[in-house]
Amino acid sequence: MVGLDASRVMLGESRSLVPEAMYVQSDIEALPFARGSLSGAWSWMTHHHIPRVRLPMALWDLHRVLSEGSPFELQVLQGDDEGSDLVDHEVGGRFFATWTPERLVDVIVGAGFEIDTGSVVVSGDEVRLSAIRSRTLADTVGPDMRLLICGSNPSLHSADAGVGYFRAGNRFWKAALASGLVSRDRDPLHALRAEGIGMTDQVKRATRAADEVTTDEYRQGLGRLERLVQWLQPKAVCFVGLGGWRAVVGSRARAGLQDASLGGRPVYVMPSTSGLNARTSPDQLADHLRAAMAVADGP
Image (cartoon, rainbow, N blue to C red; front, side):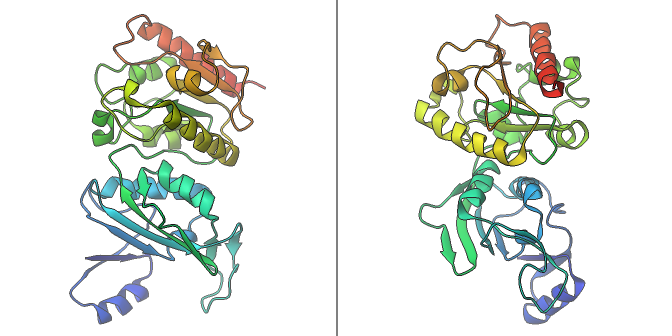
């Protein structure tokens, strides 16, 4: 067992009660643990001290350090406000971000966790849930995104690597580098922080092949995406692959800027970057990403 807190005083109090545990003074937004090194997480009235727009990346980091199938228990304050001194507390000046159950569930699912059915409970001014760390990718999203890249769903290989489009045969990162979308290969964290490029998937379930995803999964995933875009407001959204968009929005949709928007933001749809899509060259893929960036940077 490892106890983690930002406060040395709190860790000292914990050590006096449970001396046999290990204790770490650290930031829950920058966990000092190796990938897959922990077998569970219990966060009780902790993650609500993070601004709401930063919770997805804090949970991305938690997903990183947990092994597949690890349980995750979470409790935060229930509500729709954030700021300092929102609640009476003996320690003044503390920041609190309250959560509605619906928005919290979307963020947890986007972070790569499967929520236990019936575990979401609102009790007084608190909301709690139980989840499992899934074999999937966690969203890398945040405020002020220039462009949100949306894949159909992760491959098992990408899920295990923790990086979308990870296989050498997938041309996404090659095209992204050639287009100027990113400056580092296979580094979604740097893409978000340095270039404002977020990454998510329409369906979170990882599969060996995209044709294993059902239309209903695409439909439910698009609903979560629309709420994500309404909330974080990227300048534009780019779907990599036409399958998910065609399954839900328009069966005859073609690559390019779409008539339909998502969450009030323009949508660009491009061909799949999979090596199986031999009809589209790497240069053409790079051209599509440049066009998506032009949509994001336009009026």
